[in-house]
Image (cartoon, rainbow, N blue to C red):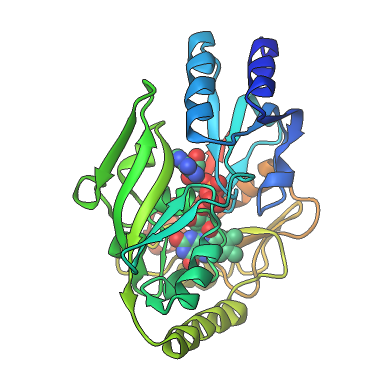
Length: 304
Ligand SMILES: Cc1cc2nc3c(=O)[nH]c(=O)nc-3n(C[C@H](O)[C@H](O)[C@H](O)COP(=O)(O)OP(=O)(O)OC[C@H]3O[C@@H](n4cnc5c(N)ncnc54)[C@H](O)[C@@H]3O)c2cc1C
């Protein structure tokens, strides 16, 4: 089924990997193999590949940096498309507008903004995702989110058309965007920042990363906050109140540092994480009446 796609990808100089373990591509270090993994090297080639993949009716998934993702132990019967090796598309126009390719790590954009004395992205320093993932998720922290700085997103629709959407059409809300319930592929975004002293920007970035190091279990593989913030509460505080800090199922454990995080203590399976999530949701609901909703995205056969 995949032979024609592999031949086409080779012709387009896109690297292909068969039965690639997805645990190598997720910050949780969890996930079985994808039948086929393709590093996409340009928007044009992505369009060509998508046409072929859709013509064959093969399921596909677009992977960013895998930092908000739980992949099932059985992996994914389909094709994973990654921009990860195409991460050099970053240009600045008019002094304060940055065009970022979807595969560019958000951290690289933060550093570029600092070097150019451009402010607005300090909140994102320490969010380990790609630009595509950050736009998809409307990633945010410390009272700011991507929607504050986005001008527009460019994507390929499921029928293969390249489209540009401006901020007002991107329907941003908390950890959600226009893209969240679609299978469109974000190829780039444009953000607008403001000039400010590099010293002030650097100080804010330092402050933010210090808070992360203090509060987040960065010493273990994890996928960031597992749950969305319920209105009027903090998920971590509710979980802690239910005395679930340190609770584990197999190798998955509620972080003892921040109860909103589940960490992989070494050999966690996706099933361990799912069972722990179910346990947390049940207990928090029984004891507080709050129904937690997951923030993380899933790939493969996963249910909470
Ligand atoms: C230690 C740690 C701290 C974190 N802190 C924060 C935080 O403060 N705030 C926050 O919001 N998040 C945080 N996260 C979560 C995560 O980093 C963000 O959600 C990030 O935006 C995800 O980007 P990604 O590239 O890793 O996406 P992935 O995890 O690879 O994918 C997430 C979703 O986006 C989709 N996607 C990715 N790229 C594209 C694309 N090009 N086109 C279409 N769809 C795409 C995927 O299909 C998937 O559904 C944290 C995670 C970790 C591990």
